[in-house]
Image (cartoon, rainbow, N blue to C red; front, side, top):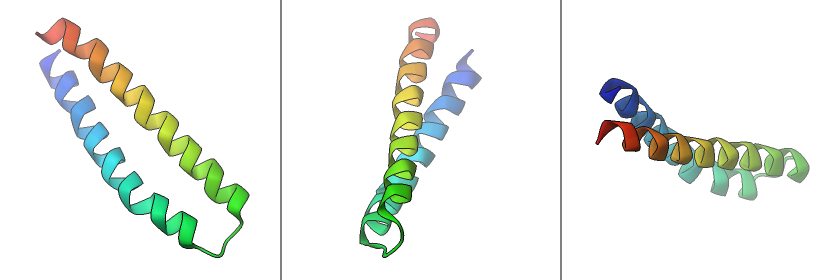
Length: 62
């Protein structure tokens, strides 16, 4: 269970880092804004899901 918790923390860090880089790039880009907004919304949803999963895992690990 502790390994699974460690993996969720690692995924959360990776997704957070990707969003820190991707959001400004997508907003500054000249591409279709609807596509950029969908990607940001998808990344944010994945981030929230990982936070909730990590919270659920921490209940069992500690």
